[in-house]
Image (cartoon, rainbow, N blue to C red; front, side):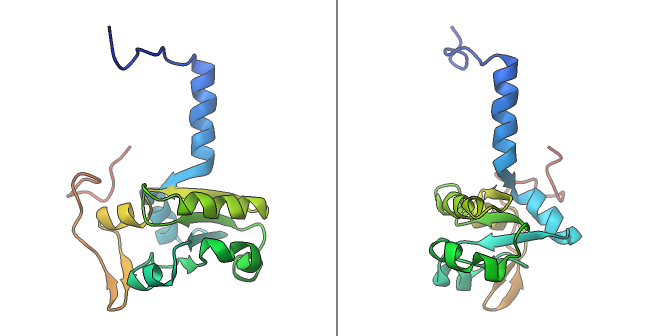
Amino acid sequence: MTRAFAVPAADPDTAVAYFLAELRVTTDVADVHADLTAGVPGLVVVDSRGEAAWAQGHLPGAVHLPTARIAERAAQIVPPGTRVVTYCWGPGCDGATRAALEFARLGYPVKQMRGGYEYWVREGLPVVTPTGLTRRAVDDLTAPAHTPHCDC
């Protein structure tokens, strides 16, 4: 008996609905990087971590808005109707999910960035640190070492 299908797969219609729903609320670091690099208008990337984390490093072009302050400050920082992508530390943290929920409650079109700051850094993408713009070497467990993207 196969372990992968010990529980039968969903019927195709259920699978389509599930995967489409997932893609409607999440995005990945490669796509966010591509959009930021292209200067896609009407997109704001929000770092929902605290002050110390922001100071340690953040995505170029991101705005800092910790989750606890979103309800009171979002309209001052992010124009209504703007598409928002939230991120936090990484896949082991629900901060980006909580931040995305707050933006959704305020009526913004929003997605959370899977992998967060951790995978952004591990994929060798640029970050702003106290010493300026920097990049770490690509972790070949998260991205191809010798090409700009995974082509998936």
